Image (cartoon, rainbow, N blue to C red):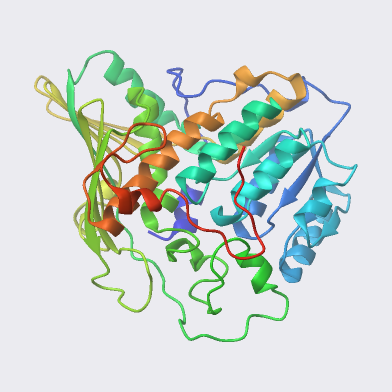
Length: 430
């Protein structure tokens, strides 16, 4: 399924179940403060940065007062669009540090690719600013740990962009499991099968509007091509680290949230690039097993198959219990127990992104961290799980994780926890 259509279709408004993956912060922002807009800076104003910014404006009580982007076209286009939407024109900056030094912001949204998250996030923490940061939390495990430490030190309000915690179908799934309808769960499966569009891999001069060196930042400076630039970077190993880390992470986060898992203790993975050779640098086919509390969570993605037979099951989570099986996705629940032949419920969700950002805005305006549904440590746990799966894939290893900083007995895999920064950049140590 086209990713843009998936996100758009996942935002159709309808019924809600009060079962509580996230029932926090759902009051309208206008009921908290009708007189003063929260002044927000946007770092990274490409496609998804603007998705989050526009969700913030839809939530209300916000003004985007500053924007930073190293692509002048993105910068100018976003400033003009925001001016039209909110009636005021944000200041524009190329350097995100200039935005952070602005006196016109009270919070920031970080919508850049993950290889930039750690530096931008920690710099914002040092300013004491509340932060809404897109997922995955960081590019590597060590960066994520530094970000957790920085937020603890700053004491600021942080929300990470796992917006599916607002999803009504997943809340209903949690209720069904907690009621014991499928019994004791022995295995969990998750998948998002998709056929990504590919782009020209020929090295070429970057667009005149894009400072490619600055875009790459602390990551390796690869020769520019449309296949690794805006958008497609998600499937480039050095910038996005692939489908599981970019999109599948949502399902792993939901599993962790429903089951109360922390981090996996054992991780293994296998796969490869079987169809899109020379087009992408991360697997188009991947199987990973992450053991949480002795329960295997089996991730799978491939390009074809499930959607051809039944599109409902192409993207979602399967919970296998001794009394039955439960499938949950963004819009559906399917329950099959020993006593019930088949029960299916369609549960679309009001805009998850808007709710998730509204939760952050409300928390900031009331200075109430308890309203946040995805705090940074939780996001670090979900991000680490998928990062470990990719390390297992890269090193062809079965990994044992101590839950903190060590892969027991795997010196080669251990090196992947912290990627060296490019000359001119320094890894954060907090």
